[in-house]
Image (cartoon, rainbow, N blue to C red; front, side, top):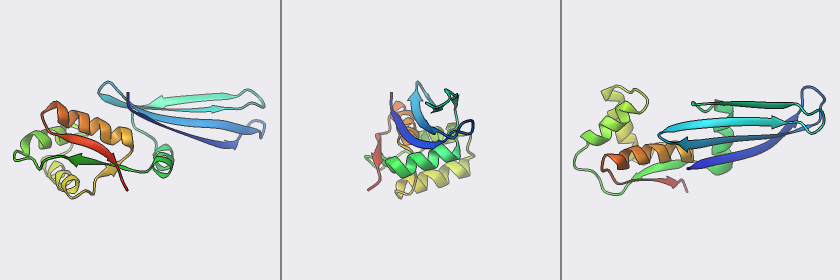
Length: 137
């Protein structure tokens, strides 16, 4: 499993003590999942939430702490059709949107969290495209 975790502190709304907060995004099977946990040592309040699409506040923190990853294609594919199929199926893109994303990828401009890019790389490898998630410099 590929995952990224972040931790931070915040004030508890109930008692004002310092909350222990964490968030994780992971590739689970063929999907992205996330969870967020807030634990208060002062009053014992616990909040746990999870889902599929990473909330913006967690994504922003994750990118700030771990940096962005980009998709690297080892060889410029002669056949773009398998890549376009994956890009269309991943997120329900239209063909023009998939083509634009492919050009962005080929130009090195597509980035995201490590788990987001790793999942896309896995989907591409499954159709025979040499793809890898790499950290942005």
